[in-house]
Image (cartoon, rainbow, N blue to C red; front, side, top):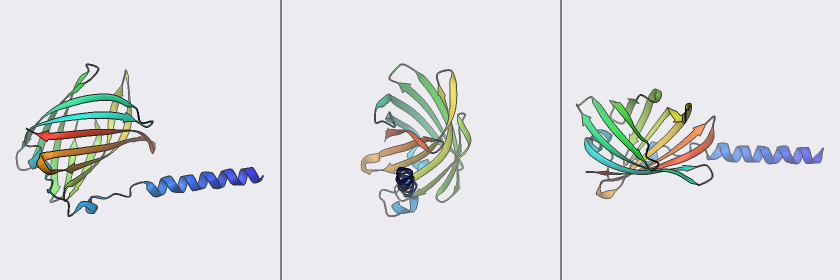
Length: 179
């Protein structure tokens, strides 16, 4: 009986620890961050990116580069992304992003389920969306909590946490440089 109580107490403590650690960062935390990140300005034109996918155990599973061509017409940003993976795979994603207010965005892409929602503040942007991720012959819907931080010299750091049913599947780290 005592071991059952101890187990439940430990499980409850762990659950509170994980719940308490979730979602603590918000865009407004970066309101004074410089340089100011304006999505449609940064991605207009050509951008190059380098990235890795790290699984939940800390193992680098994939490395890739991305060539991005962006165009902004005053209302919508179109990003044509060409991915080149270290295993030879190539893929394309085309984002269509609409600025819905001074600091909010909505985006759609062929492999995004529904609409991605973004909020910017200072040097940061936070995207939340569900991606239909292809794995071999199958696909699985995974949630992305995607953070971008503009640094000096035009370097943009992107860290995206990928989860399924609330469990972390891995982290995608990408570094962008405007050409």
